[in-house]
Length: 104
Image 1 (spheres, helix red, strand yellow):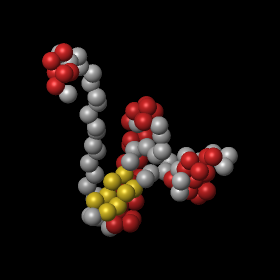
Image 2 (tube, rainbow, N blue to C red):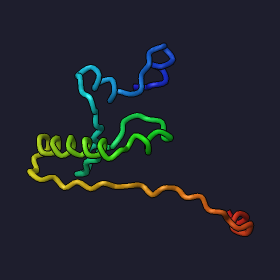
Image 3 (cartoon, helix red, strand yellow):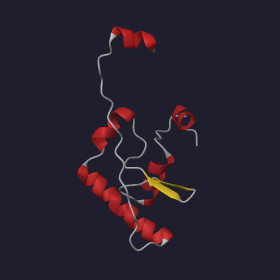
């Protein structure tokens, strides 16, 4: 689905995940990407990047992890799924020396 075309038609649409959640009455949708033996769940759905860090609260993360653990057991069979939480490094602003700036 091309969100921009849907929005240009005057229909507010953030993504299919939110659309399906609303249609099925799900309070907290979780996106699960599956491929090559790897399963990756995201802690948020379609948000502007500037809003992501504020959206990931301890209670939301716990709720998402509970959903993921349950769905992994239901859909893929492990009684005790192994779940790893990855936390991206935060970008830190550092002052560069004039020589370092020239070398870029």
